[in-house]
Amino acid sequence: MKTLTLAVSMTALAAAPALADKAAVLDTYADIAQAAYEDSLTTATALQTAVDALIAAPSAEALQAAKTAWLQARVPYQQTEVFRFGNAIVDDWEGKVNAWPLDEGLIDYVDAAYGGATDENQYAVLNVVATPEFTLSGETVDANDITPELLASTLHEADAVESNVATGYHAIEFMLWGQDLNGHAAGAGSRPWTDYAGGDACTNGNCDRRGAYLKAATDLLVSDLEWMAAQWVDGGDARTALTENETAGIATILTGMGSLSYGEQAGERMKLGVMLNDPEEEHDCFSDNTHNSHYYDALGIRNVYVGEYIRVDGSIVSGTSLSSLVAAADAGVDAELTNKLNATMIEMSQMKSAAEAGFSYDMMLERGNKEGEALIMAAVDALIDQTRSIERAVAVLGADQIEFEGSDSLDNPGAVFE
Image (tube, rainbow, N blue to C red; front, side):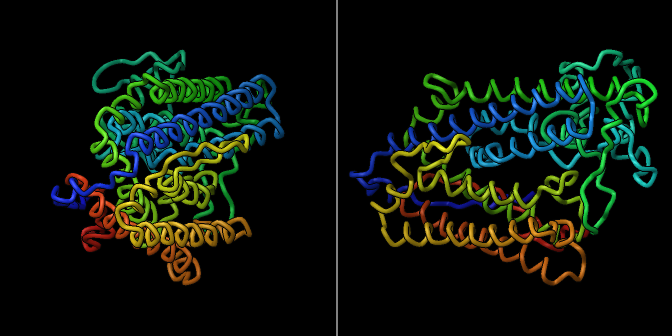
């Protein structure tokens, strides 16, 4: 992955607007982070309840309720991704809860076309649900009891392979939907509810262990989110680290906005998929929920700039915004960036509406689908365009040297196919 380095002279720092309250801006940002992670925890706890109900009394209705709870849980969580990159505490933790893509054969059964172990990943089809004991890196692992500790400490990134994702939203997504075997055709994964049934009704074997895996992964997600929500309360480590140096704190906000906007979302999550025409490049590939993930990622960027977040209960967290700080330095740059953030949300809304009307994101990615490519690339272009305005905001605020995440798909497209 490339890094886009934005060097900004410190000479402008002395001219930073005196009327704007940097401390208040940081407080608003931290308040939004706290609220969004608390909402992520609340919705994950609802998911936990639905998963427990599915395991206790499997049925088609219980499985659908768990899927619905998972989809609802994604809404606040995706709006927290803007807190990555600049906040080391978040970046060091994020891989536990939202890592992707994953080699799902590590976890459970997969279609024969999935293939087997590879030189890159010897555990690509381990199928721990069906394997109560296995050898990992030369050591025998007792997996008779599938626990959160087994998932987090042994399986996740097993053998130092990043695609061995055993925890988080996407592992749970796979356990609920199963593989999406439709390619570019309509349809998400279609795991039967009987994969969690008891006795003779059980399909694909090991239903009790499959339930244990799903419960362990969901319980772990809840505990991980409890930890992160606590980092943003008054006195929490993330809030303290952000606010102890106002200049560095403002740089943190801008770093997260620019990195998510450019390298991560426009590049790795969107442009790369268009280049490869690969439905596996969907962020939520089992559930066909990628359009929502992209939408709420972009909304999260806008939230922290305008200083406003709408909670899942409809209440609003708001306060002194980064927008006001930029406006005090250069009203034209603030207006430009605000307009571009709004333009991005319009493009994301159009893509989201199309998907909700039946034109799913994996269908958009099909080679030769000009309408789908146009929808995705309009959003990509808007993200790139808003990043240029984020760079201008960095300049007028006189921030320190800032590095935005880059992507070969944007910075060196030829390298994608090497």
